[in-house]
Image 1 (cartoon, rainbow, N blue to C red):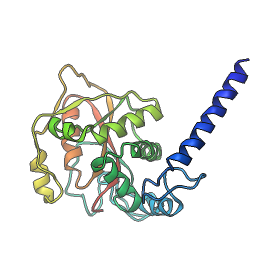
Image 2: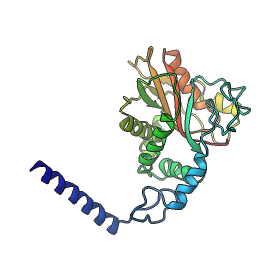
Image 3: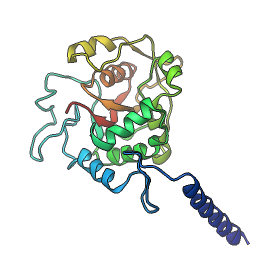
Image 4: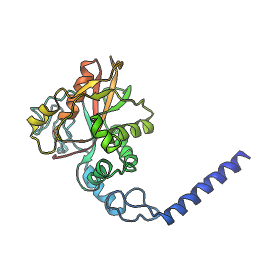
Length: 251
């Protein structure tokens, strides 16, 4: 009997999906075009663009910049050798370009929270593709200032972190708070970015991360200043920290 009920539920679910796709056709998260029945999340052309953004997987483990297959970048690449991040290692999905960048912009600026599902899946694949020197106790994320989060309605990094936790089974939780407003980093130099976020984060009251291994999530990394500053707070509190981002910009 239970098997019949389950079969009926699945059938109704498929019927509901088919009706929904007919009345409200699914759109590509990259270009906005209508998806074919067998396409998931992105159309064929945008999947190709996504693969170009992901590349062959060769990137610097400190700043995420693309490097050649035979480049020795454990100590950093030419772009970041003068930068000592406070996190131990970084995982990225790809470069901030094409459909990957468009999905992030949709998530951040156009309330496209549905993009967090696919981006979270891609992020899990990137994390699982790295040979980590630690097993994570918890997934957390870079916090927004309360006013910016109130205006946006959510923190996109939190959506990604929670999606990653749901998929991986890792514990998730907010460990950090933003204690002061910071200007947008977009047009700042590397030095100014570091100064802009200096002292911007603090550990949440009552949080103990002593001897914990934390995976810190954010959407985009440019110079690494924000991720490094946030990781430094956790590290000072006794944690080991790695970072996972969807995309690296300017690389």
